[in-house]
Image (tube, rainbow, N blue to C red; front, top):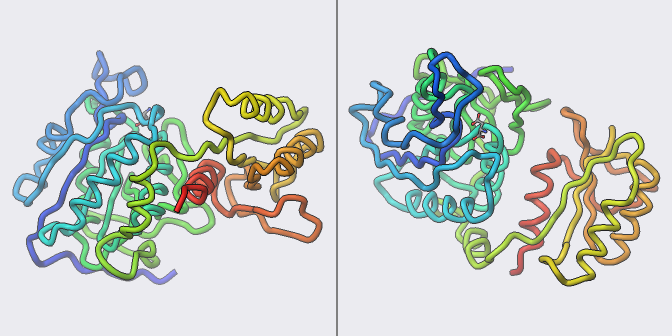
Amino acid sequence: MQAIEAVPAQDAQRLVILGTGGTIAGRAALAGDNVGYVAGQVSVGDLVDAVPMLKHLPLDVEQVAQLDSKDMNFDVWKALAVQVAFHLGRSDVMGVVITHGTDTIEETAFFLQSVLKPAKPVVLTCAMRPATALVPDGPQNLSDAVAVARQVGAQGVVVVCAGQIHGADDVTKVHTYRVDAFDSGDAGPLGCVEEGMVRLFRPWPGACLAGSFDASAHDRVQASLVLPRVVLLTSHADADGLMVHALLAQAASGMVQPLRGIVVAGTGNGTLHKNLEIALLEAQAQGIRVVLSSRCVRGRVLAHLGQRFSEVSSLSPVKSRIALALDLLPG
Ligand code: ASP
């Protein structure tokens, strides 16, 4: 792999730092406690103030949400998309950094990349240890994220954690505890940050061709009160069709938002337990879109002759759910 040395930005331009909570903003009762804390307690302003390297940079800081990202939802995504789009449209802003929890950072990154395809960098960062830890990882991650957002030529949505830069489509949280909790699977990281310098291994994520973000996709999302309902199921030993039948019955009752799609995390190359498969074929026959993904952490589902579901996804199951829901949006 050839390393491309990226050049640091020369012009002083503004960065916007948006806070959404997470462990990076978490507080524990004991300084030595890295797991028994409450996420989303410290303001993004205080997180920025804790990083001396950021003191003299032109920054705007804004709290968009303050939550544990395990509870992330479409309303916060919409609010984030609005703010990110607004700031990217400013001529004095070169990029946006978002502080976020690690649990769903890959989903938010994928959502923003899918919806905005930003022509400027949007850098999500996080921490595995709370702000009150003896050795917190948040300040270094935030400093690295700012270095990435100031990089000339940077574009698209990326996640920066533990010195690595991951593309929104590939990044996955793979560890429950370690500070280097993220991986980009077969693709590998986009690059790394070393002492504030960015080293790029492969191109930035793709961006829209005109403007600083994709206004049409952004408008479609903003016009929707809810994301079309797509449910994620997993195939496993002893799997059956009960969940699918329950979903179909619930949808038929008209009590909940109509079910529009099911993403199934299959085994291996998207294979399914035969009992689950029968139920999913029934769902498909009723007009529910069924997409096959894989519960394997590496590789992608390859379509093949004789496949009984027409849609397969090369994304992780959680990202396949977002992709299908966005595809189902009206307009
Ligand atoms: N539960 C936390 C969150 O996602 C975990 C973290 O940030 O590491 O907000």
